Length: 252
Image (cartoon, rainbow, N blue to C red):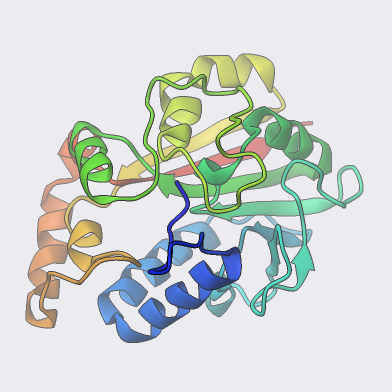
């Protein structure tokens, strides 16, 4: 469900992004986490060819990759071009990278997006995704503390009528379903988009950061300890992870 303001009216995309901008400026742990995740994506970009960020929001990925083209589904003060992920305005085989940071779970038609990605990417071009991951721990936490829907029983590739036409609506389980639980179907339907990397990460620091909508719980003095605990918990990623990284590469 879309968040509502105190008067009961639905938040617009611009309202939500303005709140994100404020959180970004006032929460140093959040900035630290997200910049480290942006760096994960930057290290995996394919070259040459333009890098298109879909649903760029407040466009902070450009701090790490300045040449990335920040797009969104509506005009906003932070983005450069209006782009629909299911109908991208790019020529066949013309794009180097399509980046979706916290965006894939907002897509109403993931199959339509994958068709478009297959069309616009050049050979060797990549789709790079960072998105929520539904482990046993994070699924319980998302359902308890997060306003976005988390439905692990949804059809992974079907059009989601609850999301269509609503930029802030989502199903946080979407990436888990498409790239992990139904990865075989993904590769059968889109064999040109090879699944070259999957990574599950983020165990305690993200929930303790408060994200963009809740009060931070971890004092600055404990950040280093938190990072050490994150490293120690990596073997338990399938059980504890809150996030996933996925890389698809366009084959010839």
